[in-house]
Image 1 (cartoon, rainbow, N blue to C red):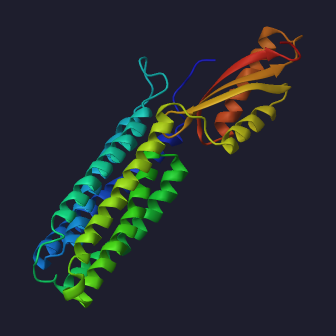
Image 2 (cartoon, rainbow, N blue to C red):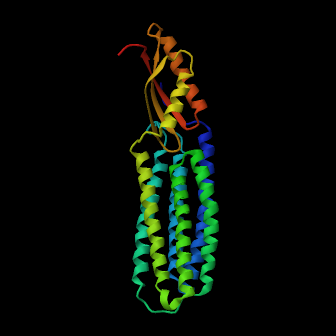
Image 3 (spheres, rainbow, N blue to C red):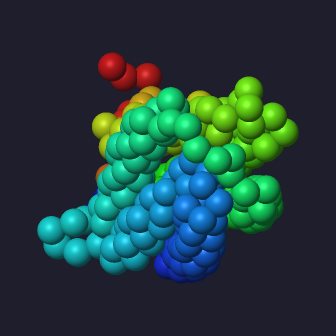
Length: 301
């Protein structure tokens, strides 16, 4: 059975993912500018660190957007499975950017721990509160859309937003502690910046791991495999499923399945069953881009 391009709705899913990524880039630009400028003017390390983190988000979301755009290109002679792996590579790149950015934030924050300086301005809390609200909305949207279209890069970006919320809360707590008692807790603001960096490092490692699992053809979860197997068994003439493999190539899975049929069938009859198995799985399982069907005789080794 030859491979063919992914179903038509793959293009619509990719477009939706690109729109979400584009909105995320715009939101991150605003948050980065707001937190970096206020952090510098107010003299708050934790707010400035949050701004640098959001600036990294701009870069990360840009890679997600590029990955989704390139991954949407149709299959061709040199790429019979399509270009979906580019989207997975984008997720891996996002993880690397976040990890390195987090290390830089941690280093800069600790450099200022022993400095003696005036406490930050109280208005520095405003951009952090705004960031928590915006990131909460964006994270929920990305998780929902990323899981719906099966995008590793967009889901990775959603995890990044979720951790942004935690890091912003940590920065806010440290800043409030410094403002309430600057004589005793002046360094808390710097440690808040360090906490932001650690959150970013953790997110980068998690995102890189998840993307790497897809890149090395890790089998999808058991529920996905069981669903595909059940779809094959729903086709008349299929006596059983001997083997079933699946790998993620971007937003969807490519499947290789060995189905058992009556050994007394003609080649033409078994070919018709294989064609129906492929059609049925593709039409009823949205996560499947294409299926390679092998015919095996029932009861024979």
